[in-house]
Image 1 (cartoon, rainbow, N blue to C red):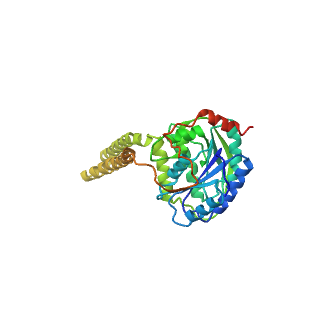
Image 2 (cartoon, rainbow, N blue to C red; image 1 turned 180 degrees about the horizontal axis):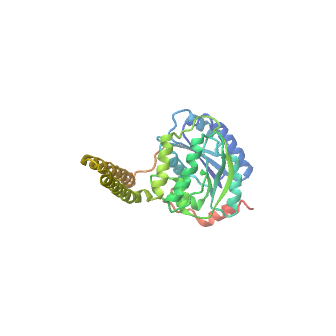
Image 3 (cartoon, rainbow, N blue to C red; image 1 turned 60 degrees about the vertical axis):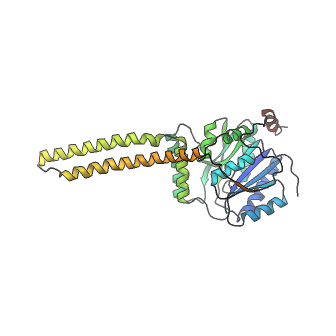
Length: 339
């Protein structure tokens, strides 16, 4: 087994039932990172996989100590798995990438180049999305435009979780305790100097996407509700709109009665009023319930995840509440790339 020095680059790879692609992912990641020429670690976060992912990751770690594994006690979700990886990463630069090879590991060297130039966040911007359905491409495109209209922060268009984060950005993210985590929005919210690298997204190397339509809808809802109160303001808009429609209906009905002599029956007015006001009220209650449910979840203060097993972590874990990382050490690590 190779003995690895303290890494300067950490790569976090969340995975859920990805046994078909792990060997190729490791090969390409390792080759790309070795070309950069600095010490690195690859941290696989097994998010409660039910296939052979755990066995394959154990074998991969056994052949190379630079490959490390965090096994969560169950499936907590993609964004939580990323958060778990951030807590275990030790590098001065941390890269987030999925296991399916849709985001090419070879782009990491370009991200590192921008990081050396002083960028604290380098995110990948997708130029083409080969292998994805037209529905997913269109919905993804309009989702980012919608959330940018609704929220006070600007999330880069056509970007995903594939990005490089400087150590101070990682520490800022770990200081944010929220449970409904939308990592792309959180990275934009913390600020710092951000740049991008354009690339073409490839089809999945193997296996099937784990993001069902329901999960994508939930993910979109997390993004909107975590960074915008515009849905709450919708209640006032709907109230005004319902009143306007009811008034318009009354004017039309009264005009029809005066002109044609045909008056709407009393029960018609009741049905019209109930439908307009009842529908608006139920929608507003649903929006309030979503925000209330999230506040309830945050107030319980449960841990984000539990770890079943780790492989390759001999040093004490440095968590978000530990501030022993010195800025001087971080600056020297970045400067080492230029030496």
